[in-house]
Image 1: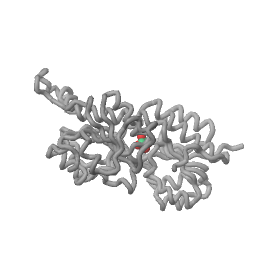
Image 2 (image 1 turned 90 degrees about the vertical axis):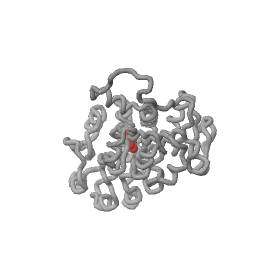
Image 3 (image 1 turned 180 degrees about the vertical axis):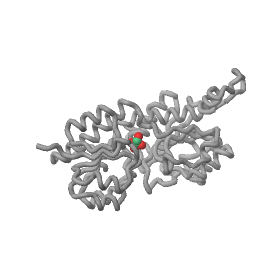
Image 4 (image 1 turned 60 degrees about the vertical axis):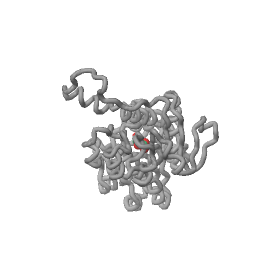
Length: 320
Ligand code: DGY
């Protein structure tokens, strides 16, 4: 019996590609560049499944034009803001994603942003690399201590909760803002806030861990930034769309925000060019889930979802 056809829009880790080739006739984007909508549609002709990734734009128009052969879409990510889920539902195409398996890696990365921004790691590294470091000095690159401070988490889902767990190791006092309080077994002592007014003034550190999409677009705007304590540190390992970049850049210039750590950007890989000019921003290229263990687990989970749909079962990783 011929194998089902799988369109893979990006290169995936070797173990994931090997499993995909074992079970599917794989149409591979060997160049590993972002495919245009026309290329996705052309390559999807006759495919049973599409395994896509952040950066691919599966909007309503593209989904409406997908060939009838496509029975399932899986994304190599937990975030699915690049896929028009309503359009997929309207076509009866289930969409799978990769929750849980990347929570620890992404929370680690958020903690890295917190530490790097607070302790001026980017500035220090640039100094050493440029050969401009003249030696230890009592007043050189003084940052702010992380341990024992208050951390506010916007979005206390799986990744937010992992970050809270790590932050407790730094004796941080954790507060969170979300649509509803968590049961105490999940909150683990973190303090819920039903309003920005009570939440933001407490946030010596603010970490954005909410999903992207319209509901959270530019959530961190000038008004909310003004409610933070002066000298707060802001980090974002979720989606660039959560931040009003102009407002954050203005606050980084005045010192209202002392430092920021960013892993994600609106319109990435492009980013607001002003970020590159600011010493007090630590910038990473969307590395949240980028560990070998995690990327393998993401690929296997995405394939599990496709396997399930094509064999008539309900996948455990359908988007909610
Ligand atoms: C995701 O899974 O949504 C991440 O942003 C990719 O690491």
